[in-house]
Image (cartoon, rainbow, N blue to C red; front, side):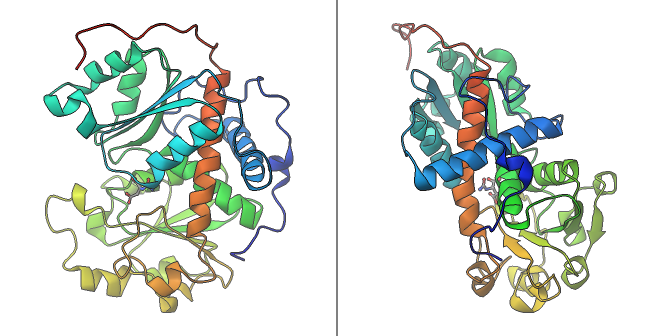
Length: 341
Ligand code: NCD
C-alpha cells in the first residue's frame, strides 16, 4: 500500500542507454496533449532512475554542467518552483529564479519582452508558470531555448501529471486498467486536465466527481465518466485524486459555502471507504485541510501525498535532462550591456 513500492512496472526497469542519446521527440514540454506513449514512458523511466539515484547515489550530478536554466514564475508556487530549482541544481545546471516581483514585469514589461530579454542571455532551459492558458506555447515561439510549462492558467501542468503517473506506477505497477477518480474543482484545474490526458493515454479509466458548477461545459467530450456524488464516483476505484478549490480563479460563488462543500465533497474516512481498500489518496498540493480533504485522510496510511513531492523532483530532473539532450551545448556569450532594468 502506501509504503515503499514492492516492484516497478517492467517498462520502467529499462536502463537509459547513456547520458547523451535522445529520449524525447519534442523540443519543448508544453503539455501532455500530443505526447506519444513512448515519449511518456521514456520520461518516466528516466525519472524512476533519478529517484533511485537521489535516494541511494550521488546527490550532485554533472548532466547539465554548463547549462543555464531560468525559472520564470508569474504565479505563486512552493513545490513546483522549488522542485524545478532543486532538479536543475542536482543535475549541475546554473539555475536562476525570476519571480514577478523582482523583475521588470512589475514595471509593466510584457511576457514577451521579458522572455526576449532573458533569451538574450542564452539560457538552455526556460521554465514558465503563468496565469494565462497558452503562455508557455507563445513563449516557445519567441525564444531559442527549450520551454517547459510549469502551469498555464487552467490549461495544462504536464510535470504534475507525469509525477502523479510515476507515483501510481511505483505503487500499482501499471496505469492500464486502473480506475482513477479526480475530485473537486475540475473547472479551474490544469492538474485535472493534464492528468486526464495522461491517464487516458496510459489506459486508465477516468472519473470526475464534482458539483456541476465546478465542471467545464465541454466535460462530455473529455472521455470521462461524470459523477456528482462522492459515494458513487469513488466506488471501487483504485486512485482518489483530490483537488484544491481554486478560489483565486473564481469570480463569484461557485459553491454555497466551504462547510457545505466539505460535507458533500471533502474526502473523509467515510467517503474513502467506498474506494477499494488499497486505493491510493493523492493531492497535488497545496492542500486545504478541512475543505477538500480531512487531515486524517491526508496523513493516513493510504496517502501518497508526500511521495508525490519526492517524485516531483525526479520527474523534473528527467524533463530537464531529456530536453537538454535535444539541444547542442551553446558557446558562452556575454550578457547584453546597458539598458536593462
Ligand atoms: C497545482 C497548480 O499550481 O496548478 N499545484 C501544484 O503545482 N503543486 C494545484 C493547485 O494550485 O491547487
